[in-house]
Length: 284
Length: 131
Image 1 (cartoon, each protein chain N blue to C red):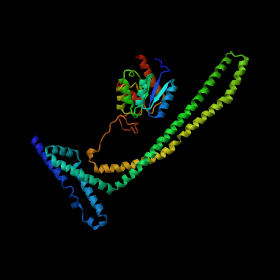
Image 2: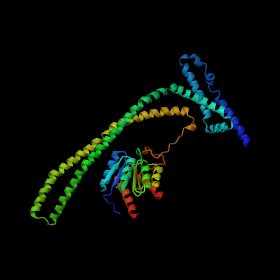
Image 3: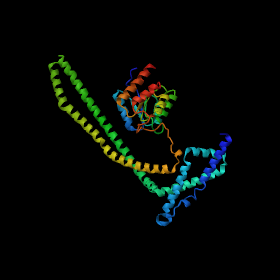
Image 4: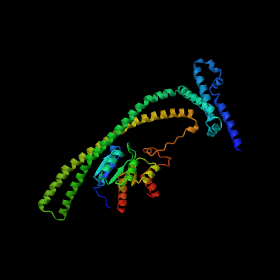
């Protein structure tokens, strides 16, 4: 294909697309079937439906990437100004359509619900953050208390064991042996039970600190269901109104937080072994 | 090089819980000389005041993140020799590569175990001994 032919082809394509744009607003009128008039109560709704149908049909016509790219190329060949006007008109029409469609499909209610549900969700998430933090503190406090108790038991046993070793090596006098027996008795009867009981209390505290799970679980379920409702609603709006070519925008960042679901992903590691392997393979 | 139990650590994380956990684990390993900072900016101030021999840092923090802290440490003549161990939830391969390229001494991905921390610390001490 020669350059001239190419340009001519594009010109023709542009003309056809431009022709596609201009009749957009009047389109709904001829589409309107006579039955709309027969049922006045839902006439308004049918009007909007027709408008929506015409615009979504048009969006489909424009959506294929090849055509869009060709249109862009055609624009550079064609005169700039009329093209811009067409674009502005089209954006205006789309904004109007979006507004009407949202109302028509009940998304205005959805958005209204969202606006009222989001502060609630924020409070719920704050509640979860608060409870989990409290739980973490309770557990850490308990281990701080329990650790020295266990250390005391260990050290006390070791001291007594050393003295008993001496006895078995015949290195203790009778008086020392008597003292050792008394000390051992005291250790077994008083120190040990007192410290194990105190440790036990801390273990119970650690167990009880897990009670947040029940509460946060319930709250999280509510937020998940809210998020699902929002997601499906917003997804349908997007699918209906956004051209396919605009749908994928990949966000790349180095601060993503924990990987929630690594299944099917090759860009993340799932354990320390993989971290080490990666670093080894890079020579670090 | 046997690690000096008096070695002074700086633990950098915006969550106090995680700082406490790392501090407790270090204590279990025999290192009781530990200070804390809640973000990279505060950490840098403390480091510049001197006296630290080891940095354990999170990545995602307000004010200054862990990678920027690491890069700043490596670009500061008085600090650049400091071992920096990253303990982070960031698990993308590009994160690990970025950290390694910035000069991290080790990379631990959360959630982690006491065993992993001990292993990585020993590995870093070995390298320090060779240097």
